[in-house]
Image (cartoon, rainbow, N blue to C red):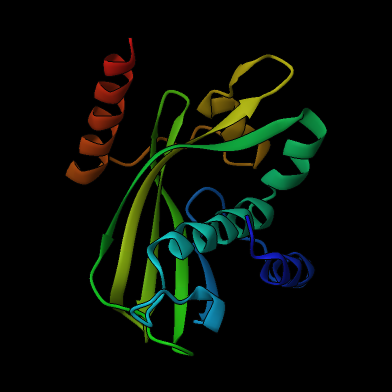
Length: 180
């Protein structure tokens, strides 16, 4: 993560922002496109989206209460796969909002959606990610009932996954088979 000032600002502000309802709370972070976010086409560069998405996931983890548990238990949030769709460009100094939410889970894998919004509802970018919480002590991923219990959301079933989420999980599985 190379967004040190934005990271520091996020960490300081997270102490004063309200807790998010687990597991379906939505993190909303305001940003502005800065000069160091731009590429030669003078719009936000593709790679910067992934960096800013890191901040959204961190905000979600901290404000749902998973951050303290992760530190205590030596858990690490991990992104395993992702797909992104660019719909509208972000120009210099343009304001945007990053929304981050859990959309479902299967086994130890959590599907997250991250959207970049212009104004209230105009989607500029949308990404789906396969993530998980890795237990460094046990050297395996944390199962969802245990993770949900740690954030006070016992016995919450996953909503049905969208076709896009199913396709991402299938693509991830296919890529793993190609490695074998």
